[in-house]
Length: 112
Length: 115
Image (cartoon, rainbow over all chains, first blue to last red):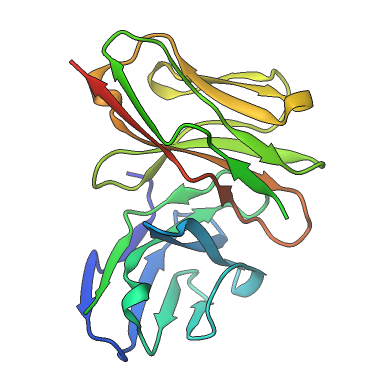
């Protein structure tokens, strides 16, 4: 158990819908990262937040957005969902700098 | 931008065989290097990491990796694999670019250990 929690574990929804994935970092960690894992794209970095502010952006679609709240939990919002958005979404956390990232159990999103 | 190459996509070994998984990265500056393991149906777990110092690093479960700066490589090794090592292994790089702290992952190596 890494100490990073994610909810829900599984999410099944339809195309065009909007979903919110939630992540709670390890105690003491200020940075939260979101990654997408799919068969065709592998593990891709989406976005990083540090203490409530966006720090780095990767291959994140405009339909996707994220935020980090004052209690440091983070939410990833995915809208206008497409079949190709079906993937495992991982959250990771770290203390803040270029240090070790610890991963949560992931949310498996299935878009039908 | 940094990139990571893992040359072996699928590896099948018998128990007690030795393992070496290749990882090369492309980035000319300072990097932190990681190997993560993903057991079937589970999340990514850290196996080992290299930040600085001794280029031979030891991780959990008997794994080790050697950082060779001149070759831009960080290969993972284990002298004797067990059936329970069946998993997918990911090499990752965190480059010091000043633009955040993202990890760039390789495509992964699926290891199957047969009894």
